[in-house]
Image (cartoon, rainbow over all chains, first blue to last red; front, side):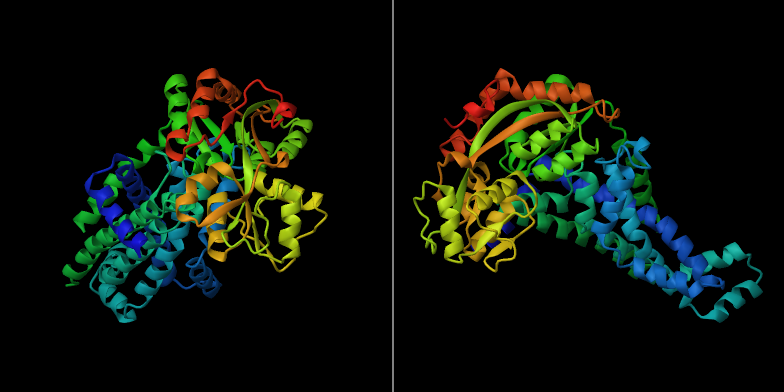
Length: 232
Length: 279
């Protein structure tokens, strides 16, 4: 029980004393996972929308693959990204293993199928007549897609939250491709793992609480957007 | 919606900024968990970095994995403690210029109740035999780390094959986590003294056997052979290795931990012969 109280106390001390190292770690987590989510949005929403609106042979297999990808294990992604980014690996010339950019890539790979799967379901769930109606009113195809995406805003924001939640809390890939380097690639989750193995349970708990607060803050902002801008 | 877009654009502008680290100045140091978990590197690296301008990327893994990274040219310099495996690594010319840095020792930690009655055993081989005879739970790292290699060597010397025994469990984790698991399960384990001392306050495990010459834990620095892997930063590796054996660093190692734990965690050995240690 002591350790729990001590952990909560430590979390507030670390937060309110504005400890530069903890702030740096928190900011990096937000930056890395935010960027990864953004990239996943680009690919996820576009591909998800296309797959939702088109018919082609093998579509079911593609959808199954996307849905399987939603449960992609971070460590497996970490392993593959590491092997690709090795100096002597296929993408070694980029020299980005053990950099924040490497974490962004791995997290984007993890988040993309999540965003894609939810967007696909969201767009496909819109009434089919709506599409005909929009087209009948003289909209171009691109305008139609834009209106559909706007219509599906509620579930799409849920997709962002799921994607961001998946990567901000992920540790396996971040530690493998980032290396948990102090002041450079150390994010909240990898720092928590390290402090735990150092036996600093109070600091580990404090970092965990900061992670939860961060996730809460980001989701609160997204939820605010989701719930206030109702579809007209 | 405008808020999302502004958050996104901030993130986009931030990306090149974090990727902009100069590359040739980077050194990848593959090392064991004990040098990181004990806090030694946190003291040494900033000194090295301000002095030389290099940026050290520390990848803290077991010695086995560290050497595997060296073998593939994915690290520039190694700081490891698995002498037998290191000799093989050198014989296969994956590394150059292997130099002695420091040592500490391993201890056999276990529950205060000491169900196998090993307390005070001078010979670690005897202690291991007693643990096996009592079927007392032993927690192994099981990860090819230096500690794991040492532990397997002691089992071998004791003529026991613990693999597959019910009382022999493997965590596959680092030293700190393995000590925590051992504490929870009231199990014995072999640990380096540095990590044990660093974690002692929350553990509830005692040192039950220590002082055997077999339990010496020796750290070497090895530069990865640039002839095998041209992408290795050999200049940086040499600078780091030289730094580790420099007088200033050796003095810091000698003092490290004295204030906090009452005794040093590592003993500096630069320039000594490996065979002369522990005598």
